[in-house]
Length: 95
Image (tube, rainbow, N blue to C red; front, side, top):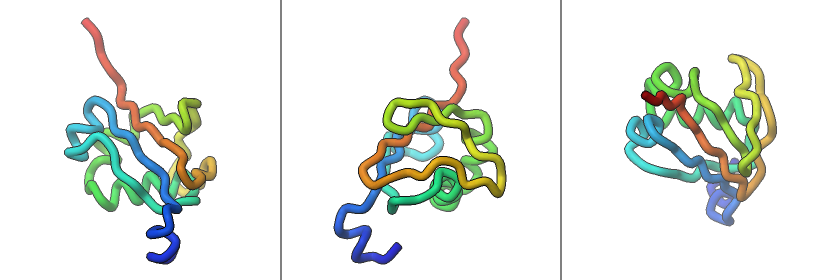
């Protein structure tokens, strides 16, 4: 993805909830799109080293409010399009 394409608005938004928000230090951020979910999660890990083991390996993921399977290592998963919202939802305990 070139800087020009990213500047032209070809991005998706990653929303962080609960522990993911705490780990990332923010509620959301933008990434270049289109991109396979596996590559997007790798980009999240690159921006926030350690988040995969701490949050992503046990989280649920939605794309535009629909739950999707988190791809296994080396798998690409669904294709995230421009303007999609990807939510990272860690497990929540109650009690």
